Image (tube, rainbow, N blue to C red):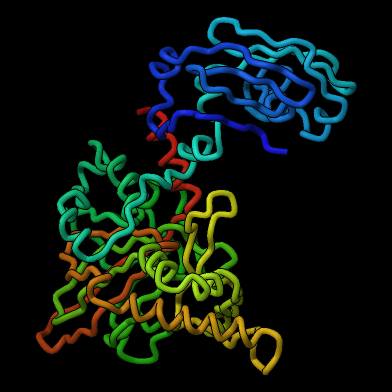
Length: 422
């Protein structure tokens, strides 16, 4: 049973759920039944499931006003739930409920709430902001590059942080420039909080500490490097920590020294590439949603292991939720290792995987630049693929980047709060 059903309802965008919009809309009571309560908003009939409405009650008897935590379970209120009356009061829907467990209670639902939950798209617009994402090619980024820059000062003192939040959602990355040169030359756990990249990251919330530490250096280690990123050789497009159960949502890389020859950074929008695969070969795209890829890290007395498909969609909306691509840390496949029932799916997966890589490596779908010293890139590690060209220090130059991770939950929390205030 659906929580709501709408008929001829207006398309409401993320920023349109304002009190002004709610005041303009006329609200009238429609037909009510054992399972549904109907309202007319600007003559558009919307039927709300009664369990949905009762479950969304925010009266003090239902939600603690201080902790803002629910005081009941859905199963407790759904059994034997009855609506004993409904009316419109002060531009709100008011419903009287009775239930064997909690007895009688009266709930009130504002027009703003009713508009926000009139259909699935409206409910999720202010949660995930999928309609504001822009899947990009190189030309798209080049034409928007000026808008993808903020200064270090404006990030902390002006509107640069809000701009960063929205650009991360829209494009998946943001550049912060004019970062003061660090006074220290050696980073360790004891002084992690003094570094600029740490200060940039904690603006979102908490740094995600990994086995690399709170922060990590990316330097050219000429002997026995534990990670290909710490060499001068070409680093292919990838995402970080796909072998974690919950890979970090954001990665930050602060350029402290970049005086070597070459070493340009390369970025690609995996969501755009996945979309192109879907259009070109829907069956292969479907296999990329289903077939699991093994990711592992077995080195330096650490052994991480996780399997996940290349593409993950949101089960509610069908929008692409995240990508998982990291060839340097890909392990043997768990399935289709012999001629068994998975062979056909594996063949389709390979078809899609080859197409994905072909599109990914097309320069049309890559944005490349050599980042300047004193700049930091912040990017969505579940969306934006990153890479680096080979570099040489034969000119006497050096390369030193400092990075860290932030959970996607911290970033999305800040994004929702920033847009709620608009």
